[in-house]
Image: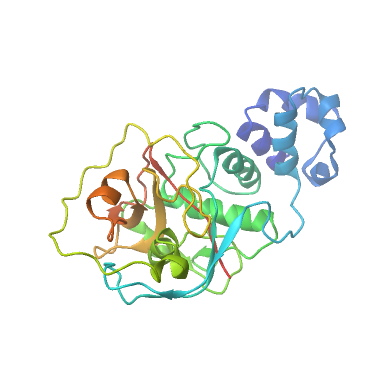
Length: 298
C-alpha cells in the first residue's frame, strides 16, 4: 500500500489523483525520483501543488539555514527590570521572521507524508504568519523541519522523535528537549525576551526603569493582530514587537501552561522599560493571534 503517496495527496487535497498515480505505476519507493514534469504529466496543473508534492516526496539536502533566515544573538544576562532578571542566555539563533504560512504548509505536507500529525493552522496569506497552532503543533513542526533538512530533531517522547499526539493541558511534561540537538526548536522564554529587547546591542543604552507601579495586564485581543509594518529591532528581527503572540518552550509555575510572549503598542507606551508581556496558555491552545518563531543552537 502506498502510504506516503496517499498521505501526501491527502495533505495537499489532491487525493482524487491517487488513481492516476497508481495507473502510472508510482509507488512509495520511487517518490523521491519524481520530477516536476512527471507530476505535470500525471495531471497536476498548478505549479504550487507540484512544488508542495515535490517537497513532500523529497528529503532536502543539508543546507545550513535551510532557507529560513536566522539571526545570531550574542548571549548575555537579562537586566534587573526584567521579571527574568539575572537569567543567563547563551548565544543562539532566532528567526528573523515568525513562521509564515507558506513555509508552514510546505513542511506540514512533508511531515504528514512521513509519519507526522500536523493540522493546517489558520491561513492569513502565504507570506503572513501562521496562527491557530498549538504548542504541540509548533514543536512537532520544528521536528519535521529538522528531519526534512537532515538535522537532528530536538523534541522527543519516550526516547523517540515526537511526531504524533496531543496530550492535553498536562501532557506536555512528557515531551523532552535534547539540548545538544542541532535542529529547529522554540525559543526559551529568556531567549525570546533577550532577542526582543535587542540583546547586547540595546542593553547598553537602556537606562534603569523609572519608578512607578506595574500596569494592569490587559486581555488578549483575539480579533486579529496589528497589520505588519516594516519594523525591525536593533538585531534586525522583524515584528517581534507586534501584537501577535509567540510560543516559547518554557512551562510556567503551574507546570502545565506554557509561556507565550508579545510586546504590544500598549506596553511600549505605558511601561517602556518593562514592555515584554508574560502570559501563559495551555499547550493545546489555538488562537488567531498565536503563532511562533524558530530558534536554533548557535
